[in-house]
Image 1 (cartoon, rainbow, N blue to C red):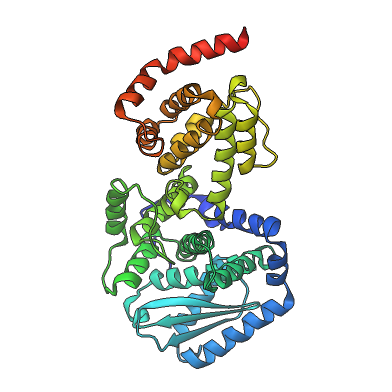
Image 2 (image 1 turned 90 degrees about the vertical axis):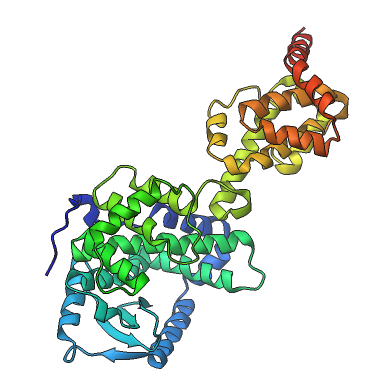
Length: 408
């Protein structure tokens, strides 16, 4: 029996769609990792995965048959129907004592394994919420011919390799977080109640028997108002993030997707960049270089040659990038990187002397990295504070003079 939710669920919340992060990662793999992608989509790869899943199920779980557990199977079938799934479902109790539930994915078969005393903790629509969460994994893995499951397997295999790069590990981590957020939405669709979904989530995380989903939603809203950083978790987002994200999505909030992306990924950060952030940083770097070399007098052979060490096809023009300052402001954790980039270009042509540094100072102020730029000039260029102050005070006059002389 479904429980009425005090949150009015938007009609659009009944439609489960892959999240933008899922689509972006699949696009990246198709374009930049074509051989790996072809392997992941091959029949052989899927057969190897299926064999491993079957073996794990036989070894680690006890099958809960429909004759002995009729109510549980009815709940599973109801959850699947609400998700639009028509697939045989097999339920198990795992040997692991940790409270949890998980999907073991096979094409054409949904296997849900409960661990620990989770089933004893759940009541009413909470059971459908947990089953809906796990079956939503199945729904995602079968979308578009299985491309999201292929991406998941590529990322898991890559992350497990001893030579995995930080960006590969980060992409795998974020893909898992967004997958859990998608599955959380499936729990709402299956149960018809945001509160039941949140209560089931908290019970799974804490082991408590009595939980108020409505109270935790209020608590989550209080936490996110104070906590701007992205998720730090490895596989499942923090419970308060998941609860708040569900409330936004279920109510049809227009900012639900952008809020979730910011909550899970956090600000653009050079030190924690996944594949997509690397692409974003690459674009911002190219645009920043173009802005640095926008004045014709900055486009010396030495400066252009140095810029082409970043991008061999780099070309600079005289048109200002009107949105660059706004986009850089959205990446405060890249301030030191930007200041290093400014100095790198400003110091690449010694013949330009102080004028290039003056231009770097002006851009540094515009990009809100002036403090970091000053620190780097004092340290990297061995400038004294007096030399820096003199350069700073005369920067605008020096630039005006250079521009006038160049035009003349």
